[in-house]
Image (cartoon, rainbow, N blue to C red; front, side, top):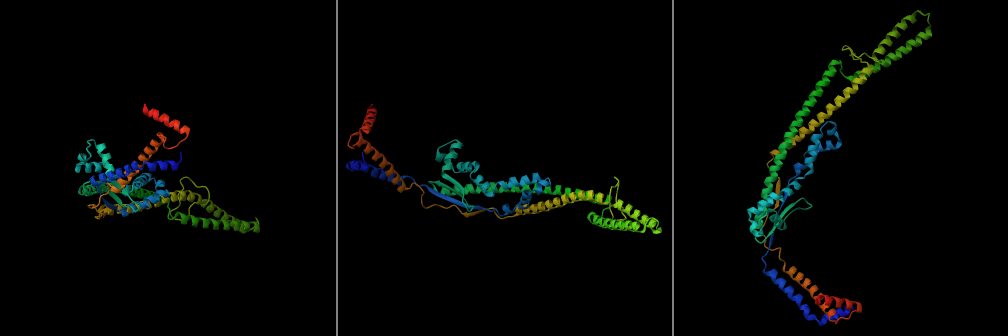
Length: 393
């Protein structure tokens, strides 16, 4: 059995291949008389300019770790969770959600069209006719296919109108909650700043500190001068000898300098407080206090920075809640379509012709093999006889 032999046999039985042509004409006729289905769509864009800039500073501080260091993990987690859902994703979820779909089905009596009673079955049928998607440029489209072009146009407008109301309501609630939360955080931050400021003021007042870093510098310079003078006196004492009359006076001065040196450098009593009549401080005491002062001043600066950021976010959130411009911009309104989308007569004719041609060809070839009109091997003939016997039974 060869392809050429099959081809020759099919030429002999060419009358059978009029069947695909007839089927194609029938399919074309069916597509012609079927009621036309029209498609309309509405295209819109979500204004996300305010959303993209909102919480930017807080998010950057969260990424840098500033918020967590300040104990603001709850604040940062709130902003992070809000930034997960984009405005367009939220709007798509509302527009294609169950509530809007059921509202459209019941408002336009699609249950009579679909001939279903259960909501789940109605939603499945409705999902085949409606399409909600977002393209690469961020444009959201909502399209619907129906035999009634006016109903299709009104239905997509109805869906978008209800989705707009729900979206705006959710956004206002979110902004209200965000504003309330930010204001609470601002009050807490102001209390923290006030508490640390009072703590530092008390620290400065109780320890007679004017400028600890500057006082440490003055003290170190004094210690350096004392050390130089002490060494000079020692050298003078050694050079003049023990019997010199001036050595006793030098020794007194050296011991006095050593006492002042020990007061500024070395161990200090637990109740030690620098004199309020001098800028000098004990260097060891000042070093321990300086670490405490740096830590608290760093905390104060961080809280003040975070307070500034939160205050900026409050102003931004208030401006968003007060602005009058619409957040949903209609790029293309729904229209009355003047050309059907299905059934496509050419597609029906081609599909009918293709399917019937394959079936007819297989029937002709199988008939030729069964009647031995197409030569085949002995093994193939035996298998065909078995098939024929099985069909005969």
